[in-house]
Every structure is written in structure tokens, then in C-alpha cells.
Image 1 (cartoon, rainbow, N blue to C red):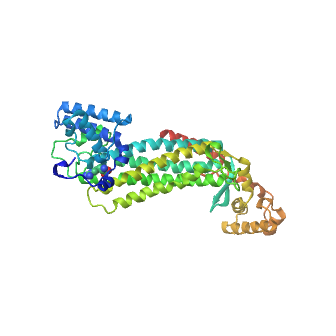
Image 2: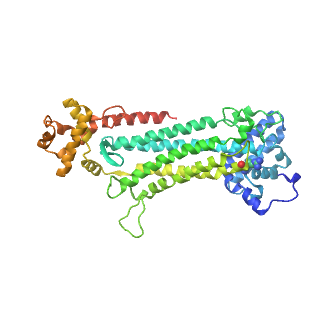
Image 3: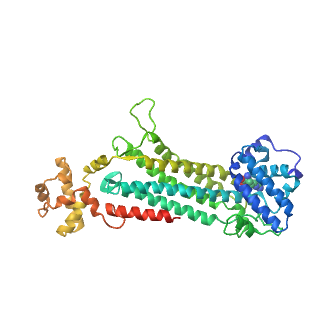
Length: 458
Ligand code: ARG
């Protein structure tokens, strides 16, 4: 492609370090779509003839068909997807193929291809996130009144419902969808027309190519157009946070499946056995979802490190954006689908969840709140009194709700037997009716609201 001033071919190792075709062939559809739009613009602006334009488009369609049928021979000698497509185009249609690259550089071409690829990817991941939310909402509705211990510090804190717990993840994945939508809106401008870095002397119309490719318009600055990879970093940052959320959910699934907890179980479809321990049922999909986060966050670190010292404009370093990006996307798509699968698959052991609330004096806060309401006690004092009652229950080896009235009155004589009402987990959960609270009625309303949002978003 630059034989004009070169006497020798590249060293073998040069070819090896330079070639990106092994991975950037994934950009073929975006590369060809960009070339089609560029070709139309060149014809419309009379930069190339209509008949050359027709030949180019026919040739590009054939190249695409060859790639999709697996017939296309990718060549490392031709470095990347851009040269591979162009060389084959010229083979098919002859010298007119050489006119396609008028007023274009691989610098604006690759910037365009990756932008289109990230945009397509967001459009593919977005419904996967929505599907995971849909699965969580369905299970939340089913378990709007299923009582379980809520934890802070992984210590038994207050009773909550399993549905409420699942809806917390619906919120997290909703924010993730918002971040993807933000990223999509910001990346949706076209770098085409920047050419190598400075723009073009030909009478091009970048607005036309931008419109044809579904962009909001062309990028205002040609230098920025070829050197900007913010959209890759931004996308991977959003993907990292989603991966972090998936990992937290997975971690809970792992804990909930473990023998000491046994809050839930996963079916044969989402577990594996052990080669030595016949009783084992391992939650591998959850563990792998948790473990694969490193690849996605690693991609974010790789991209930031790759960009941080780059002078304007294009640098070959930027070719290094693709492998982390592709791997992060493959990983995220896989773990998103596995997570939705696990959420739909899991069986909840209501009795075990309920039994787990019998430990840890889980309604101690309810007792303190009752003292405030019934005896008009300052909360700090109520906290202290309840603490003494918990201590007494511990000494007797029983739970707070089992503590005899006489014991309670030994600490605070004004306590009457009505206190036992607030010590039940059902009453505790039902009383938390404040906005965003865990009362089953609230959870059912939250399920409805989440479903309505799911239909509307993004
Ligand atoms: N394969 C290159 C990349 O991915 C394409 C752009 C090359 N541009 C250049 N001037 N060498 O970044």
C-alpha cells in the first residue's frame, strides 16, 4: 500500500508486531458500511464518477458476502481489516477500487469503525441488561413477602424480604443502562472527513456521511476526530461497573448456595459436580462471573494506560484498544446471560430464609423503636435499654423474642406484653412502609413501578 517509497518489505517480526487483522477482522461489517457511505458521498460530491461508485459498492457487497461465507482469505501481509477489504475490492473491480480511499485515511476510517462497533455493541448489550432486570423483577414479585435476614457487615441486621433484596439489583442494572445510553449519546458523532488528521482538500461533505451512518453530525475538530478514544474508555468504564454489579450478585449466589446458608439452590443446569466429592454441587457460573470481572476492569486499566501519554493525533498505540475492548464485551455478554439464567433458575428455600431470622436478635431495632414510640424514650436511651435486653438474652442463651416479660421488666419496668408484637419478623417487615422500604406492600408497588420503567427505558 506504500510501495511507492519502499524498496524492501517488512522484517518478519515487523509484520508480526504490526498486523492487527487477527483481531480487527471483527470490524468488517462496520468497515464496509463506512466505505459504502464514504463512496456515496464521493459520488454525490462528484469526487468520483457514478459508475466507479457503483462498481465500488458492488465490489464491497461481494467482499462482505465472501467474509460472511468464510471464503475470504485474510492476509497478515495486508496488516489490518481496512487494507484487506480494499485489496480484495481492487482485485474484484480493478483500478476503480483505488478511488475509494480518496479523501480518507485509515486514521479516520478506524476511528469510525470502532465507534460504529461500540455503538452496535451498546445496542446489543442494552436489551441483555433489560432482560436481567426482567428476570429479577419476576422473582422479586414472587418473593415480595418472603422473609430473610438483611445484612450489614454480613452480620444479621434487620429482617427484609427476598423480593426487596432482588429489586436493589434492578436499580443497579438500571443505572448501568443509563450509563450505556449516556455513552451512546456522546459517541454518536462521526470522525469521517478528518482524513489523516488535518481534513481534506477535496470538496467532501462530512455531514452527509454522518447522516448516512446514523450519527448526529460530524466531529468539529479533525485532530480530535482521529485521536479520540474516549468512547472506548467510557464504554469500558460503564462495562466495568456492570461487571462489578454482576460480581456482587454472583458473590451472594455463592454464599446463599453454601451449606451453612442454603438460602437457595441452583439446578443441574447451572452447577457442576466434583470429580471426587459426590455430594458437591458447585455454583461455577456464579464463581466465573465473579472471577471474570478482572478481565473487564483490566481492559479499562489497559485502555487508560495506553492513552495517557499519547501526543495528538493518531499513534499506532491505539491499535491496542481492540483486543481489550473485544474481550471485555465478550466477557460481559457471557456473564450477563449467565446471570439472567441463574436468577431464573434459582430455587428459594423460604423455610431456611425464615429460620435464619431466628438468630442475631434481628428485631432489636424494632424493640428500640417501640420504646421510643410507646414510652416516649429518647432513641439513645432506648438503644441502651435494648442493648441490656440483648445482653440478658445472650446470657440465657435465647433470642430477644423469647425473653420472658419478667426479664424485660427487670431492665425497664414500663415494658408490657404488647412488646412481643413488634418482636415478630412479619410485623417488623410489614412496619417498614417508608418510601423504598421493605414492607411487602411496598415491594409489590416497587415491582409494578420497575416493570413500568422497564417498558419505557431507555
Ligand atoms: N490497524 C490500525 C489501528 O487499528 C488502523 C489505523 C492505522 N493507521 C496508520 N496510520 N497506520 O489503529
